[in-house]
Length: 337
Image (cartoon, rainbow, N blue to C red; front, side):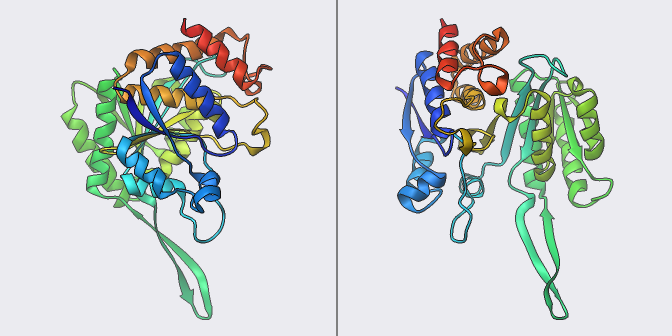
């Protein structure tokens, strides 16, 4: 039977790159039953909700979703899409791989960043402090890091390393200054690392030193695990090492649900012009295929995609070519054989 997957095309260039990705998966013979749903501005237009109940219900049933870029409307009364999805499905692991496709400033980069997705400063516990007549004299944000949250994200990183033939996990922290919150994350990380001793190498890096080392010798890193805020920053830095967000897929993983996405924006200025690069969503779809057990097609599609880029004859504008979305998609499909 086909595997049911919720497809959320998204806003801006989302529908274009989603259609391109579906065409490639269909051409590869992937056995998927797509359930198309809306979110973002498309959700507001149809349901007056950027993350409609129908979309949430679909994900609850399929437990797997492929999501294009979404725009969260500005204004009161609307939920943050990413926050709603993380909270509803407890998507605690944000997984961001970055791999060199075309050698440039750096070569041989193959890093996967595993970011804790539900705790830290982004948990949203903050308030203003009144001083005298000023109700907003100060603002306070609380970083909450739990033993359970730390253990499951670090363990996920080690299990990911084992499952993908990786050799090393680097834990990134700031425990030298934030001795309680970051200290707990580091202590738990060390405890979990001992269980994998002899199978996976383990090292620790302080966040500021890590940021420097990433732009000096990024090839030394393999799997990186860190807390929410640091992961948000480092994931974009790592994407920049291999060409930017146009080639940056992402996955949000929970215990029972996984949502795969292009992490770039909606790019409304090029929407509808048939010039967008569908690469990030294609690579996210490959991650999705691996998740549902279709590793063969994931490898075929990824190889066809990378071969098309390395060949250099049919490239979208952001990759230095002149081809449109449709032509680039056709070229990838031709490589599938």
